[in-house]
Image (cartoon, rainbow, N blue to C red; front, side, top):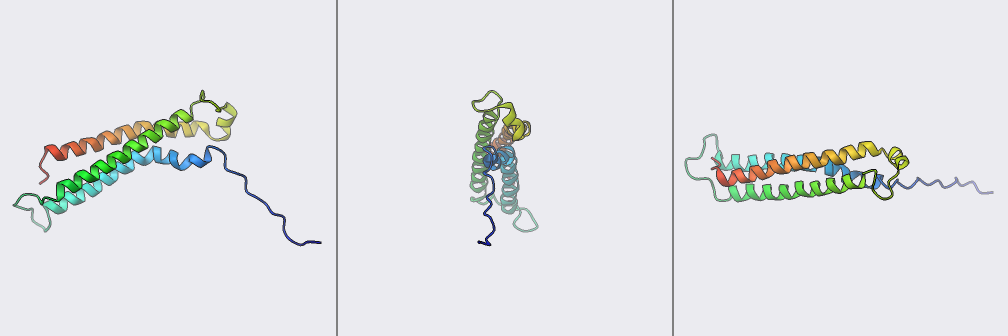
Length: 144
């Protein structure tokens, strides 16, 4: 007689559960990119203009604008990637898409997931536009 405990296995995740991280990135990616662009860009430009307590009387160091612009471009790409992910997730959670049934939607919180995906499209568009505006303003207006 064996005294070993029976082996139990955890159930495999439902098809929608594996993409939950992607859905949250689609919802929050644009806002996170805008936040990083604002904070890091502000720190770079502020340090270039005010390295001490007094503002500079000479022109801005040559490294400040390219660094701030590069950060903006990288964060714009991140916002656009989040937008593409949100569009794909919105299409995936439509009730008319192949393999999507109402029972599956209810079992996998379809309404909430659809809301997150569609909200991600709106927010990613908004924050990507804000990032693009900030990049444009670096070209138009002097930083100090």
